[in-house]
Length: 111
Image 1: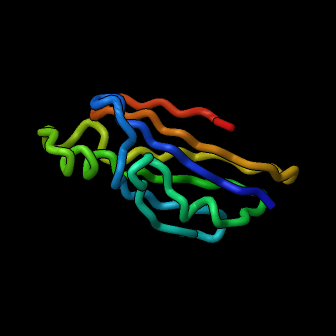
Image 2: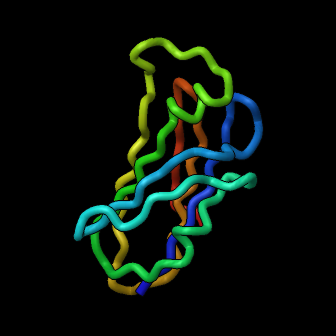
Image 3: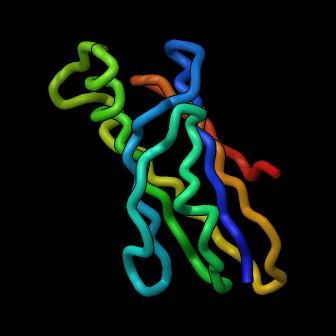
C-alpha cells in the first residue's frame, strides 16, 4: 500500500493556499473530499492507504481565488485543476504538490 500527501502554494500571493477544496478519485471512483489547511496541506489525504492504480486530485482553483478576493473573468481561465497520476505496485509515499495562480500551474512528484 502507498500513502499520499499534497501541498498547494498560491504563487500569486506567495503563500500557502489555505481553504482550497479538493477531491481525490481512484479506481473505484471518489475516495475523499477535503480542503487545505493554513499550511496548504490536506491531512485527510495522508491518512489513507492506497493500492496500485490510476488516481486524480481535482483542485477547486477558481473558487479559492474568488474567496481570496481575486476578480476572475467569467468563465475563469482555470476553474479546476486535475492532476492525474499513477501509484505503482511497489508502494511508497506519493506527494503531489500544486503551485498555482489564476492563469498557470505546475506540479511534480515531490517527496
